[in-house]
Image (cartoon, rainbow, N blue to C red; front, side, top):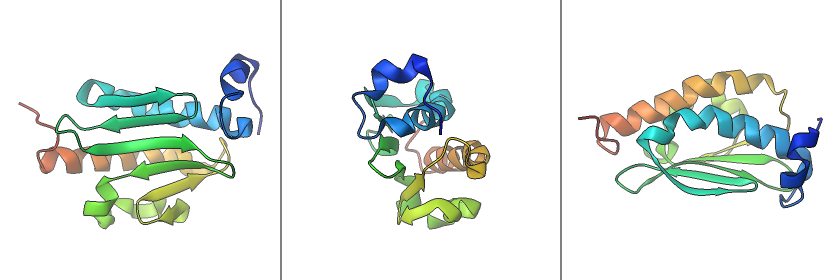
Length: 127
């Protein structure tokens, strides 16, 4: 895994600088939901989105051995997981270790399923 120079200053505050590029890649995928959510945390290595009804949506956190994606909609609807079960490390947690992981390309569709679940359960009013 390659840490880009532009992330070097940010990486020094993360638990594992090796996951800097991965963290920002995952964060970029989730950025499209910011207009519909509340950004509760946007620190070096930790990013959390909450629904407008103040429920956790998805969080990303750099850990020592992986980058964890914490997906609360999975708690309420485990069927949302689909093929992302290959990276499931807990009931509502996915773990990634490489920014070149082939499963990253499936994350946008997975996040969209989670977003639609929140819309359908009125956690995200779409009036």
